[in-house]
Length: 292
Image (cartoon, rainbow, N blue to C red; front, side, top):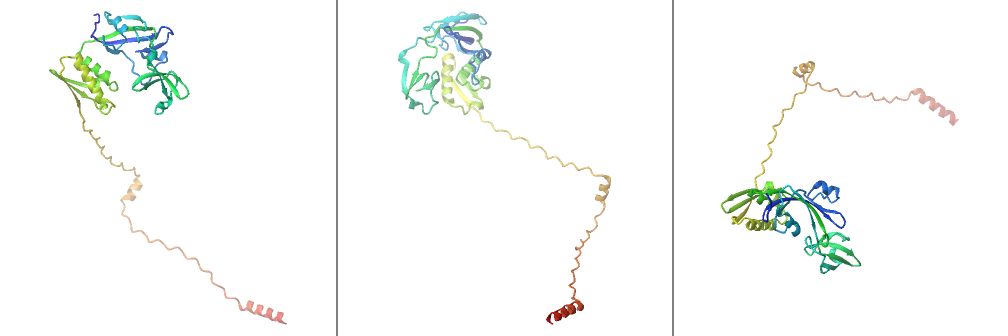
């Protein structure tokens, strides 16, 4: 079935710059690795669009109208049909001190400045040249594109719109409940504390009311569940140690009163010998001889 404006689509593509042949964007993980543009924080896979909403370059969307799902097509877009011609008026010189709270700028670096994406073109003495033109402005683009799937199921369409605004959480974790014109979206716990969640909710509500005229009210439900405590493991009885029969008998025999320990034997004190009279007399005699 040929696609038409307003269809919800999943699209695969690889984008090259004609002038250089360089691959600059793709939905395929393997192609990104081969082209050295793979990033760990990027999510690869078919891109969700609503045909005619301008989520892809105008010339590319026009080429998809009437295309059958699964058909591959190569589309060449001039700058006017792609991201426009370069506008010199979008170049700015800003003081280097404005980057003090940011990473030190280098030529070719993509930055967000004054709330808008920009590219650093040059860094001079105290000044930085910032380019607010799209990085692919003025380039001729070549897309290899195919339509992976046309979304028909309403819940699948709604979840795809939610994932567009809240990409950090897998869309399958959101639960939907619809009653007549009221839609309730149960928000998973992973999304409770995301930065900018309230802004994302407002954007989701605007999208749903724009593309689903039968939805009047959108409610977001956040349920905080009690965490169940882990059951305590029963204490295991200590296994008695194996006792030999001999030891077992000794253990069963009544214990006699402990013997009083003997006091350590006292060493005989060396008795002081009385000097013999003969010796003393001899010494005296010797003394008397000296006196002579």
